[in-house]
Length: 116
Length: 113
Image 1 (cartoon, rainbow over the protein chains, first blue to last red):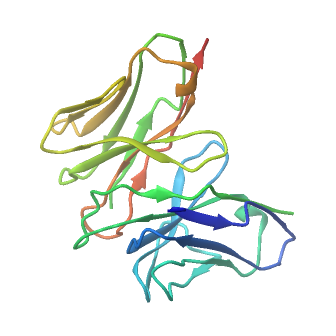
Image 2 (tube, one colour):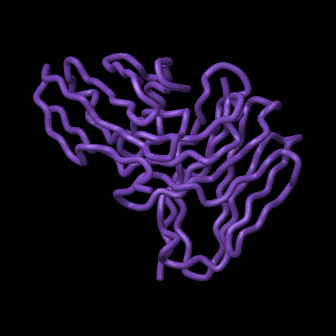
Image 3 (cartoon, rainbow over the protein chains, first blue to last red):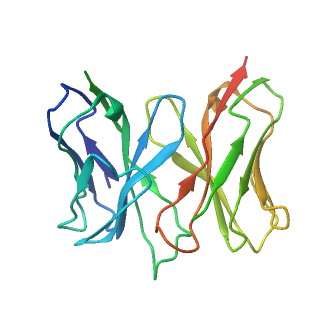
């Protein structure tokens, strides 16, 4: 199992550009998440999904969009990049039975994004 | 939703000493408390967790204690080694609302050889 795979690992964007951060998992997990981690800070939830076709906002969703067309993939879209979106982005997944959150979350290696 | 506070933000210890990191949570109905370790350039990884029906859990040099009355839980690392140097996050799941873990702000642990 590869686990959670994120691409790209690094990216520099100019203000106003768009990009998609890719995330895929091969563990058949139903729950998937996107977090951002600013320097010296904790993890803030951007969006999450409890299954294919279902997405919901986290703490800091503004400026981002997501989709979940398959169980495996959960891409994060930045439409108009801003310097405030400079951060490290982590995708994660977990298996939840009947909404129970008492299970391990598996994280990808992260995407380091710089907006200039 | 759940609110998790973590202290200290940085911790420096000598190799062989113990390290303790503490978290408090807001929702008294919370019943699962994991700890994640993030090494440089990597994503967080679960190292130990505890459920609300026990007060302590150990795994070799790491242990987690839970005080449900005071709504806090702590990570204890004994006989610290340089490879323990990392950022540690506590977390708690929501009881209602968002179906995702809420993480503490992290503790950067540095073990001095």
